[in-house]
Length: 133
Ligand SMILES: [Zn+2]
Image (tube, rainbow, N blue to C red):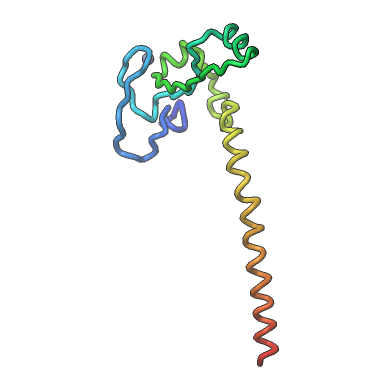
């Protein structure tokens, strides 16, 4: 059967069930893996006023608000965009996965460095064993 999306529009995988969440905009009940979560900085003080207050030395609090949206609302609010068929098939869709890949790529660089030092002591251990025998 032809699929429109590789992951069927969800991140569930072969998990059987998952909790449902409410959309913060329209109140629709959507599966958690299908919902779009966005963390946005929110300040009770308007931007221009906050800049002026910070110049004068005042500390303006910034709160981070995490919102959950259904797909319809995410597209309506401009968080997601409707993509063409070719674009949907591409693995890299937005800038976010690139940032995650950079963080994921860092640990393998340290792992070979950790694996190399144990090889040197074993060689020294072998040399010691040869001298003993
Ligand atoms: Zn919604």
